[in-house]
Image (cartoon, rainbow, N blue to C red; front, top):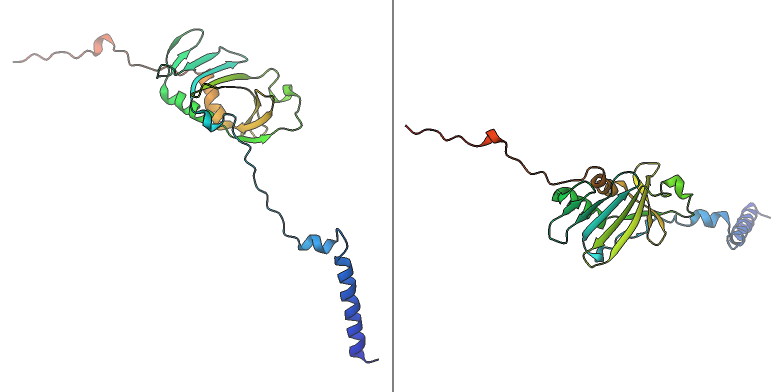
Length: 198
């Protein structure tokens, strides 16, 4: 046989073997040639659905400390604590209220760890929000995540989720430092003195 014939027969055998191997399920070559799937982040939704409107009443009950109630049914934010009540600083409260409507679920926790390990047994904070459509949303706030970038939340239906820390931080700051509206009080010597006219 001629040398070129032998090379052609060998090449034919290699191609036939490769064809046969490619027809087998789970072969390495096919897996290598498959495009790598790109990860897409699923939208898990919000703690408070955007269609519910804006918060009109917020109640925050810390496990340690006094509860506060913020109510805007009269048109301005009124703050009530066990010690005091009065108008609230609208900038602080509006920032927290806007954060509530943008409280995106970053991840769902499945399977659920022991609730005491993530600060939800007992919860660090109980939050109840009444929305402008009349609906009420309740959830519990637990500990911060290991990376300190989120909080563990238990929704009213029992789901465990993680939300971004910055929205919850502004809400919890209201309970730690109730934002009563500061009004300037005149001092007795601050009244203008009349200047004598010559």
